Length: 308
Image 1 (cartoon, one colour):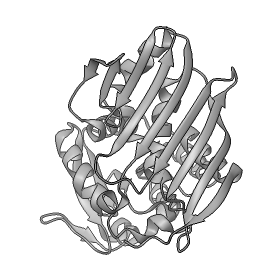
Image 2 (cartoon, rainbow, N blue to C red; image 1 turned 180 degrees about the vertical axis):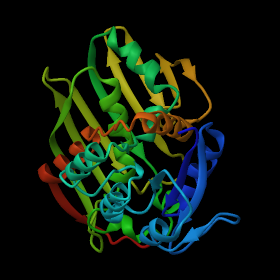
Image 3 (cartoon, rainbow, N blue to C red; image 1 turned 90 degrees about the vertical axis):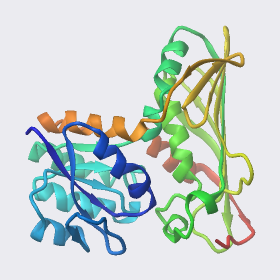
């Protein structure tokens, strides 16, 4: 396969803002079609559903699923059954267990299933992992706060069961934490704030640790106005590491040591093209497990209704 012909399924904000440009910039990847009930892209074949795409669309090798997570499992199953490679936007689904049958399907079909965590590909994340590997970590704090009205305007699905609420961005932070720390982490307690009219939290405070008892805390909030916060602070025996800008900037004791332009989604598609050559899969569910455990362990409070 010399060129991976990709169809985007679900053509909302993230697909328009990130996926289209990333595919265009990656050698070996071509955007061949769009499937969406509500949007299209001039010059490309368009279909209302993935079923219509698979039945009537042009020849494609892969689908990139950007629809809300509540429908992603069924779409992935349809694509794998049709012999297509599958990229899953984050989160990969609405539950952990629903991914297991897809992993089996992909293996049996010798097709790629790629559960993406775009924030892991932010430019300072790998340098942070390497720096921390040689040091003793004493504590970690995540401060991940943004304005939902800016980043998810009119997206009612995010407040429904399976939409994750504030964990939709919060899982990005957890994907970085699980990448840069040397040992697996787990949730020990959580406080979840649910708007009175929503089925998903608007804010959350998590307490986590690892097998060695490392102190890890995380604050997520969808009600931030003004400056937005996507920061991870790691105290070590040789100074404080700060990842800011969602993993784009790394500083040690306030001094910048790593920073580069954002190519997160380009890196995802480079990885997808590479995986598809052999049909290998990459499905790390660690960040989703942490979110699921936060819901299991969380103490819930009801706060004022959310009005978009």
